[in-house]
Image (tube, rainbow, N blue to C red; front, side):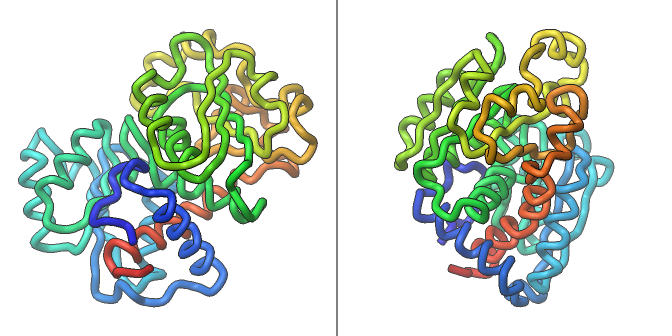
Length: 304
C-alpha cells in the first residue's frame, strides 16, 4: 500500500507502482466505490489547470468524497502566511491535501507540517500523477510494461523526470532525445539508475534515432508554465524536435503518440500527429482521473 504521502515517484517501490496501476485499472473497469465518503481533499493550486483540477475533483466525487479548490488568490502561500501554517490549518479541517506548486520544496514542506496526507499534483521538479496516468495508458494498450521501449522527445522537465523514475520502476526502457542544455541533469539520471527496477533511461541528441523500435513516442511543451519568458529561445533551440508525421515514419507503424497536454500544436507536436489514429493523448487525460482515484483510495481510504 502507498505510504502516507505521494510527493514524488521516488516514494514508490516497483510493487507499489504495480499495485496502484492494478487498482486504477480495476476502478476504471468496475467503477469506484464510495470509500472516501465524508472526506474532503483540499486542492491548493499556485498554477491553474484543466486536467489536474478536474481529475482530482472527479476522482474524489467518484470515491464518495468532495474536493475544496483553493486558488493562489485564496492560499497565497508565502505571501499571506507561511507554508507550515497553511499545512497545519488545513490539517484540522480536511482529510488530505493535493498541491500544484512551483517549488518542490513547497510540496515537501506541506508534507512535513501537515498531519494529513499530501499529494504532489505538480511541481517544477515532478509530475508524479501524470506519470501514473502515462503508465496506466501503456498498460491498457500493451498489458505488461516490462520490456517496452518508449521515446520522449523534448525538454527534460518535470514530466520527463517523473516519467524516467516511473519507467525504471516498471521495467520500461526510456530514451530521451533533447538538445544540448535541455537534458535531464546527471543527478536525476543517477537517482533513476539507483532505483529498484529493471528499466533504463538513455539520453541522445537525435530524435530519429530515439524513436526506432519504440512502443510509444511522447512529447511535452518546450516552455512549461513559468518558463514562458524563454519561449522564443526554446523554439529556436528545439528546431528539429517536433513530433510530426516525418518523425513518426521513423518509428514502428503501431507506435503510439503521447502528450500530457496542453499541447502547443505546431510547436512540439504537429496537428496531424496529435489527431492521428495512433494518438492516445485523450486516453492519457482521462487516465489522470483513474490513476488519482487509486492514489487517493490508497492513502485516504487504505485500499490495497
